[in-house]
Amino acid sequence: MNRDSSTIPALEARSLTLAYRKTPILKDLDVSILNGRITTLIGKNGCGKSTLLSGLSRLLSPKSGSVYLNGRSIQELSTRTVAQQMGVLPQSPPHPEGISVRSLVALGRYPRQHWLRSWSVEDEKMVERALSMTNMSPFGDRPLDSLSGGQKQRAWIAMALAQDTPILLLDEPTTYLDVAHQIEILDLLYHLNKTGDRTIVMVLHDLNLACRYSDVIVAIKQGKIVAKGNPNDIITASLITEIFDVGCTLLDDPVTHRPICIPQSQVFDVADKRQS
Image 1 (tube, one colour):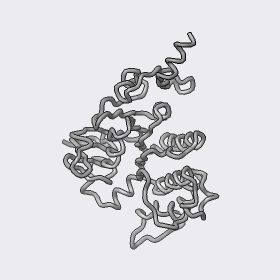
Image 2 (cartoon, one colour):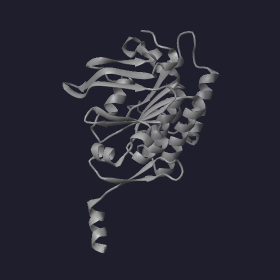
Image 3 (cartoon, one colour):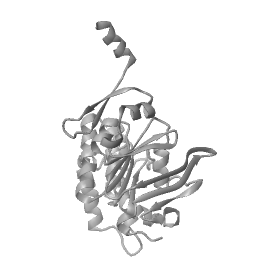
Image 4 (cartoon, helix red, strand yellow):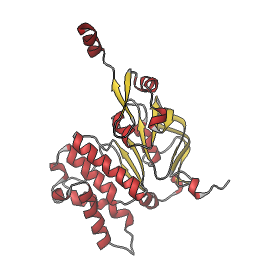
């Protein structure tokens, strides 16, 4: 059956089973990632968020089932074709020893190279633009290993941006970042999505930031999707308890009118009762 190209998901998993060695992490999972949306995966540590992102990006081959990129089986596409469509930032990616920040960011342009097209002025512009967008221009000539954890994270994000793909997959892009730089990066991703129609899939641990910046949230528990939709539609106190095994109070974000989660604490609850 042929589908209108406008209805074809940017990424789609069908009956996807992913495993490390012989241990299944996700089994028979179905999920669609819509074009032009920010989709965020949430859930407890070890629930399968990063595994799903690895499967969608072809970093992890499925034991069964398939992943489709713009309606085509991702396993049948060349590595270059995939890299021209999808930029990926995994957790703790490896890097060549002694590489500078600018050289790392330039790696994002290599999928655009081939024997008829060498390094160009356009490539140079995209590298400098990515450094500027992440506020990493002053660190361009510094060795990556000399940077703080947050600075390294922004350098890796710059590399993904330099790739200039319509789809970005980011595994915990705010790791190591202080609150100001977390907002800076998420504002940047939001801007890329709204002004450039960039499809973004990311894993976030901060539920409140996930609610604020996402069009779609995918809640995962023990390798299964238990809820998917707009934060205002699916984020409830009962869902948070089901996913994270913690009670909470939900408030309304006065700026975005998205849910804000205030987790319950036995320590402070006890203290409050004593004071009363």
